[in-house]
Image (cartoon, protein in one colour):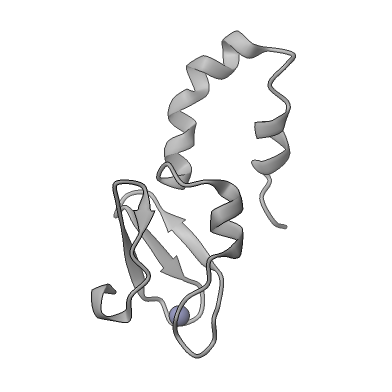
Length: 83
Ligand SMILES: [Zn+2]
């Protein structure tokens, strides 16, 4: 269930050229490190994991639905900033 994209990211050796054309796919994580995304949790009481909302450029809590903006590749995990 977790990260179907994960394993693909690590298997770049076989078709590197193809990987370059797929570079925009990294937008799926808003430029964030997948490992960082894994350890990030919402500051709400549930401390739920976050999903990436590419259209809105937000990290969205899977529990409370708050959206946290990502500024210059840095997630702003403040309830004050949540939308
Ligand atoms: Zn939350």
